[in-house]
Length: 275
Ligand SMILES: C[S@@+](CC[C@H](N)C(=O)[O-])C[C@H]1O[C@@H](n2cnc3c(N)ncnc32)[C@H](O)[C@@H]1O
Image (tube, rainbow, N blue to C red):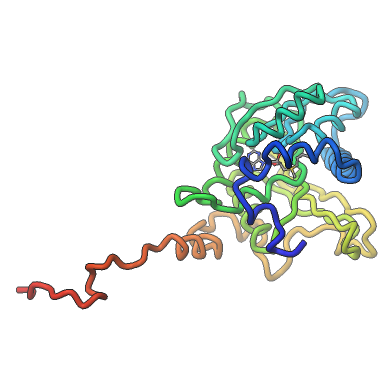
């Protein structure tokens, strides 16, 4: 996906996913099929107990495609989304889950230990973008992951299919997830294929040395999952690392730096002598 075409560059999610965009989700059968397949894979990676219904949370549930897959697989779900247009489409489509209009970046407010698993399909990368001066992606990701951690039952998993724009975004997301207490890593399906390649971040709640699932269609086990490559930070190194040292934080800080006021010393304004 070329960077200028990314929806994340066009508008904040609640603006981008307006009525027109939301309608596309219930009219484009190819896209619906792709979202459903990715949702199915995310639920598979949750490794839920067989033959019993689980209660799932769907972050960025949109028009309910991912939730519908959960229903088909016999699970109950609650969805959360920032776009009222997307949720309206979900309601029109009469999906089964309960839905909440909320911004994941502001943190979640569920009772501790509520969910048996969490999925998110094509949504979490939105939290890497700042849409106002007040929005700090690192802080928003931390607020999200720390509240998510407490909403999950001990020993359960959260699986995020995502489209990071670059490796730094994936690093920022995993850094904040780790700071919030999660362990885990990245599973890559079909890493060799440009079209079929899919990235899943698998997070474990309350599990210290998780056995990472294997990615599909990988020629060797090294490309099937990435704990974190050597040029990136490992979980151990990430622990305790200040957000303020991250590349994103510095770039964000630079963006926010105010231009000098017209009456500062840079304008040559005469100053009173210092005594
Ligand atoms: C590509 S759509 C995917 C929808 C659904 N998961 C699916 O597979 O059909 C991404 C969704 O993420 C939601 N989203 C983006 N940022 C969000 C945020 N900060 N909080 C909650 N939802 C968000 C958008 O509103 C949108 O509905």
